[in-house]
Image 1 (spheres, helix red, strand yellow):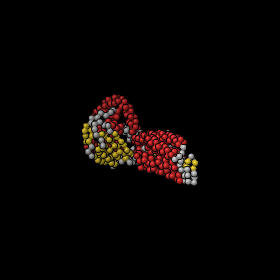
Image 2 (image 1 turned 90 degrees about the vertical axis):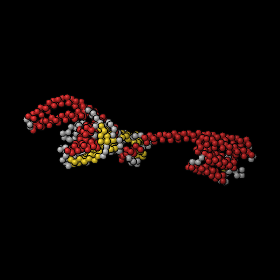
Image 3 (image 1 turned 180 degrees about the vertical axis):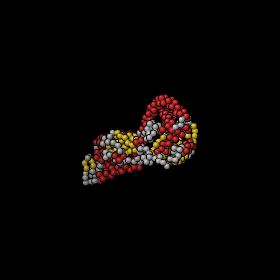
Image 4 (image 1 turned 30 degrees about the vertical axis):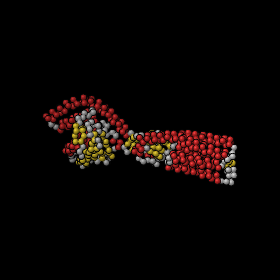
Length: 466
């Protein structure tokens, strides 16, 4: 052994590189096999056999180069570390125990070859203790790393779950102002914006803490916060429905005010108006004249105006029955075609398929007549008004469309407000009443319009009773 004498007592003979080469091969084998087991996901039995072979190799090299006093005893330590990495605390303890057995065997072999037994046992004992300590510490470290990894995995899964299920869109923006990550709801709201600059995605004040966006008739509220050293996070919420609820609440408040006004008007105007109409009727019968006829017409108009006030101020009393909505719409369309005010002005085309629902027929006739009248008045002479009736999931859809002048975008939010009108001589109550009746049925009414392209009202009614 001393003739070989490559590593003994900490002294290295550089004239013989064989042991160094064997040591390098041992370490390389350990690294390669560890990496291979990570890829192949080998069984624990195979791993223990592999580590036993590594311990045997380290023991042979230690025995060859001086026993427990050899510097190559360090080859046990990476084997223990690999055991902790691949098999956790138990693996570290088992590999440390195998290493201790291997080192004790090397010490016994060295003592039997004539070395001082006491010194050999002392060196072996101290190094065996170091192997056991390394095994314990490596096992604890591996267990701590595994626990931290599990905690990070749970946190990552929880974060991904929250980002996937949160109703808001979440965008991660890098320091270069480019979007690096978007959650699923963010893609639904904004599309695939990864890689785009923030100014390409939003048109609002993107350098403020919060701003509003209007994209494709949707109202979005955006807010952002800084991520130190990483950029910023932008949260996008779709408040279109809340905005609509607020507008409906404000509209209802205005209708309450209309109701209070209407009650006063009805009391103060209706009785004198009835007396006035009766007197004018008697005068017209005794002394017919064009002036009296005009006066009677104006009195009737005032009476209708009071009726509209009252209709707009009260929640409509519905008497729902099962009807074929397509037949009801066809009846109203046919009556409208016979009206001399519109018969020669517009053509009404109807496309209807069977659509049963539970509605108040009289109230729905009022809704349809109002919409047809508005469409005819918005159309040029010789224009066309189209009406569709069809079933949709859970209900019925009615569409009334024209190709008239259209409604400016800024006015679309106000057309259902009481007293708002764009037509000379209009009261601004017709669409307010329509909206009330449709909502009284548990339905909804939508409007889509563009200047010079026409207007389309869509009514969604549930199949069941309101």
